[in-house]
Length: 79
Image (cartoon, rainbow, N blue to C red):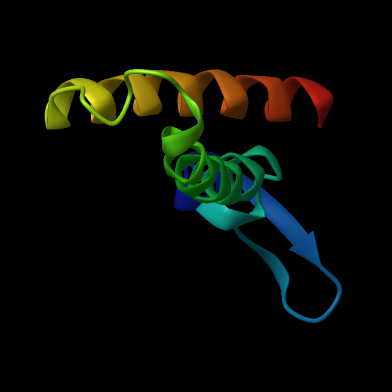
């Protein structure tokens, strides 16, 4: 068994078979950019929620992270 049997390959018209890169899986860039956008968006919304500005720093970050992961899940489902 040679190396080409062990790795997933994509066929390119110019150079034959080549290993598939991580960013060529369409869900990963969607999840990455969705995470970046939604994480910033969650912090932009902080002043609009009662009690959020008085919340402990790491508690607020944890809350925003959990909301961001939920938003990424919605984005992947919609994708």
